[in-house]
Each structure stands twice: as structure tokens, then as C-alpha cells.
Image 1 (spheres, helix red, strand yellow):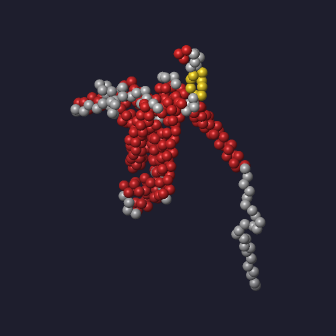
Image 2 (cartoon, rainbow, N blue to C red):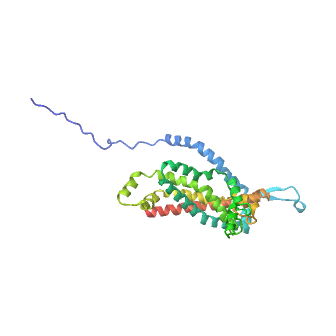
Image 3 (cartoon, rainbow, N blue to C red):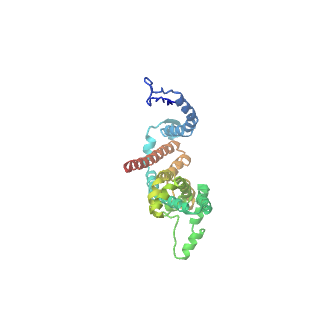
Length: 320
């Protein structure tokens, strides 16, 4: 008896002759735009339109008519006059130098402290990690004005127990003096935002696969080597993010010097760029000059943020 084996038909692996590439339709693009439309509408309403209106306001001025300028005022076109006036004010330029000095010290300190706290908390047992994480994050839940008022009581001589304690040992620091008030403000900012930035770093630390640390441990790496050579490079995106947040927050410094101003003569109405624009808008009733200062501040913040991001991206590309 002869058994005949069934023949298996081998199908060609390539595409059928004459078969072209699938034609791309416009329907997926339309669906994407439909889903993006609500976000784009809100983004345009809360960001694009206010920025455009601020630019428009910065190019206007008040023209006064009649004898001694007591006639009916009218709104006229100023061009770049408000920008020239703002950049010609020494106090406004000095305020930028002040916040840049503040950022040079505060931003690295903030990033370093948030990173160290995150790495230390990762080594703590889960039973205590949640409590410590909430404790470090708690200052972020305190509004900036309230936090500044609380620290203000700790800075004022005769009221502060810290000042009295230092006086008893022969030290007499002036936390609100001309040379120290900027660093007193930096202390408030670091106290308030270090826990928030720490959570960003911890979130990225938790996403690191355990296999990587186990492999490094098997290869003989110690805790310090694992932290510096394995984990730290992997949390680089979170470090870049909190650095950008800190740069923007530095240029937005406003509530702390405004609240401390009644407690010290070292803080003027033009102490920071934001405070200078606020003074022009609500104390001097010059909305158009304040708009010009706000636009200048936005341009500087964007330039520093995107400049830092481009520098980090270029270095990352060189490393690869």
C-alpha cells in the first residue's frame, strides 16, 4: 500500500505583484484634530490671546491734551516707546540682575536638594516612605503668601525665636538686611518647592526597572555606584524638568518680596521684574508700561528656558 503525502502549497512571502502601498486617507487626521480642538481652544483663550493682548497693550500710550495736560486723555499708538522707557529704567534692569543672581544660587541648590531627598527616600522602607514623602511635600500645600508671613515672623528681630537664640550665643544675623534679604527669600522658596520637585524625581526613580539595579549589584557595584552610575543618568529627564521649572519660577518671583516689603526697607517697589510691572500697573496707573515690562519678562524667561533645553539636548546628542 502506497501512502501519498499531501503537497503543501508555499505562498510567496512578498506582496502580490501589482499591489501598491495602501493609500493614506485624511480621516485619521481629521479625527486627531477633532480631539485636539478642545485643548487648542482653551490654550488659545488662556494663553495665546492674553499674550497677544499684552503685546498690543504695550504699544499704546495715553495722550493728554489741553493746557497743562488736563484735557480729555486719548489712547494713541506708542510703537516701541514703552519698551525703550522700560529698558532705560535703572531699577528695572537691576531687578533682572537681582533675580539672575538669585537663580544662579537657588536653582542648583533646589535641584540638588530635591535629588538628594528623592534618593534618600527611595532607600527608606515603605512604611516610613509615605509619611516622609507627605512631610516633605506639605510646604508646597501652603500658599506662598502664608508661607512668607510665617517666615517673616522668624526673620524679624525681637519676634523671631531663631534670632533670639542666635543673639544669646553672640550671633546677631540680620535676615532682612540689604545683603541678606535675597537669601532669606531663597530660603522660603527652597523650603516651599523642594518637596514638589522631589516627587518628580521620585516618580522617575520608581520607573527604573529592578533588573538594572540587580544586574549592577551582581556585577559588584555598591550603593553609591548604583546611585551615581545607574540611577542618576536615568532620572536626567526629571532633573531637566525641575531645572526648567526653577528657572521660570525664579523670574516669576513676586509674592515673597511683596509680603516682606513692609518688614524691611531693603525691598523696594522695583525689587523684582514682576514687582516692578505690578507697581506700574496698580500704583502708578501706567498699564501700558507694565504690559511692556511683562512682555520683556516673558521673552527673557522663554530665552533662558529654551536656551537651557537646547543646551541639554545638544549635550545629550553628543553623548550618544
